[in-house]
Length: 385
Image (tube, rainbow, N blue to C red; front, side, top):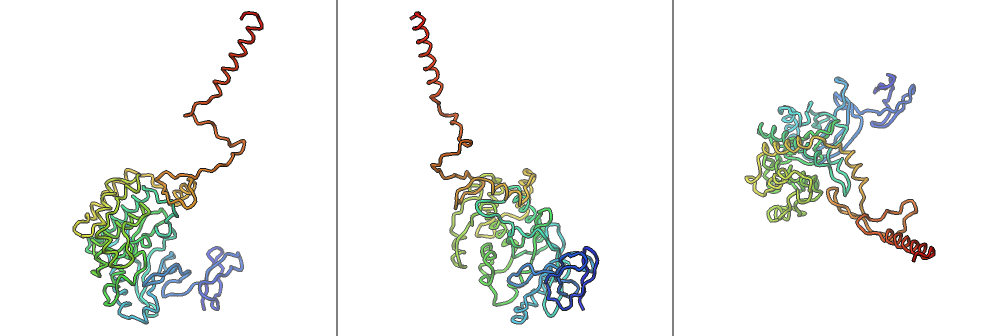
C-alpha cells in the first residue's frame, strides 16, 4: 500500500492503484499532489531529464524532509554493459567521498536499487546555465558571467588541488542555486566512460563534443589541462555568442583547434574585461602546456567580478535586452548598436518627430522676412517712405 500526505492540510491519501507521477487532488483542500514512485529511501516525484548515462528525478528524502535530485543509471545500459554500470558506480562512490567545496554540488549518497547504480544530490529548482541561455540577440550580462566563471574556476582549483579532474564541463552541468550562484555538477562521473574500453567521444552529446579538449578528442581521458580548455570554450561562447572553432567530427575539430585564428573575446564583446579575455583565449591553446593555470584564471575572474559587483539576475537581463530595438532576423548582440530598418510610413499626428537639432530650420527666416515686409508697408502708408 502506498499512502501520501497532503502538505497543505495533512490529509492522508491511498494512491496504491495510481500510476507514478500522476496527479491527484486532495479531497479536503483540493491541493494538487503528485503520486510518488518509491526508490529505496527516497520518493521520486518527477522525471526531469536524461543524459548519456543517467536519467534524473526530482525526489523527496522523507528521513531528512528535503528535496533531492536522484541520478539513476539507465536501465538499458545496465542490461547491455554491466562493466560500464560498475565503472559508474565506482565513480559515484569517489564523488561522494571527494572533499566538499561551496562551488561543487554535494553528493549526498550513492548506491544501487534494482541493480541500477544511483546517487543523490541537492535539487536546484533554478535549473542550469544551459536552461537560462537567452535567445539571439541577447547575451548574459558580463558581471553575471564574471561571477559564474569565478565560481567555476575556484571549484576547479579545488578539484585540481586534490588531484581530481572534472572531465565533463558544460553549461548543462553548471547548476544554479536560488541566488543564481553556480555549482559544478557531475565531477568525475564521465570518467566512467573512459574507464571502459570501446567507448569514445563519438558517443557523447553535441555540447560535450563542442567543448571537448584535444586530449579528450584523442581519447586520452580527463585531465586538469583538459578542464581548462573546456571551461575556456564554454565561456568564450557564453560571452560572445560565437563558437571559437568549427568541425563536425574528430579530425576536422582537431584541425580547427590547431589552425583556426579565432578573434579574442573582447573584440566580439566590447564591455568585456580585457585581461580575462586574453586568458580565455590562452585557455583554448592546442597545447596543454600553453594554457594558463587554474589559479590565475580564478584570480582574474574574481578581480573582474569584484570590479563589477552589481551582477544582474539572469531573468532581468533577458527582459532588458528583449526591450531593446532590433530588426527581424537581426544577428546583432546587445553590446553592439542594433540598426533598425527605415520605413516610409507617415507617423500619426501625436508621434511626429521634432526637427533634428543638428539641422537649420527655414521657419525663423520666413518669419523675419514677413515682419520686414509688414514694417515697410506700414511706413509707406504713413508717408514716412
